[in-house]
Amino acid sequence: MERKIIETSDGSKTIYLVDWDEHYHSKHGAIQEAYHVFIHAGLTLFSHRDIAILEMGFGTGLNAFITLEEAQKLHLKIAYTGVELYPISQTELQQLNYLQQLNKQSLAPLFWSMHQNPWNDVIPLTENFSLKKVQMDFLEVADHNKYHLIYFDAFGARVQPELWTEHLFLKMYNALKYNGILVTYAAKGSVRRALQSVGFAVERLPGPPGKREMLRARKVNTPVVA
View (tube, rainbow, N blue to C red):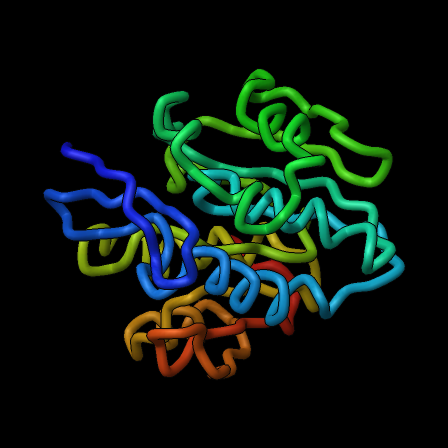
């Protein structure tokens, strides 16, 4: 599949999959979308706590990196797990400009460590942030009652409809602790209904630039057995 590095509207770069006409992050602003969907609508609901986060779609590492940086501000200790079947290449990584756009060049060693450290091992990157990257298909996730927050950042339902179904959302529901939160950039009615059908309480929120809405879902009952 042909892949290109493109610049999004806020100046940050992302990866464009030509054959699918799909982007890793919003073409209207990669960094803006990451902060809006995952930090402001998700992470900021937690403070002064130890929490576990699951990211479905580790991709460029942008969401993990800004979470690491925000953890200190929110007085959080985070155990972060990122699931990704197809890691990006070193060539692609070197063309991304998140450090420059965020003015965080001093944190470059941490950003590179996120990508260069081994998969399937828990790596303590700072005193309050550990990272475990897991290279596997989303459909293989089988955790139960483990996470406080899920960043659901899969490619869109138009190109990967199997990742936006009741079957996978039931796995997400079971993976969360009681009162846990799932946030996603998606807002389609079919996605909202699939989340609700497995037990989530779902709310529509204003979306990031270029999108009218996004979804936030809360686990309000005990785990459902698949």
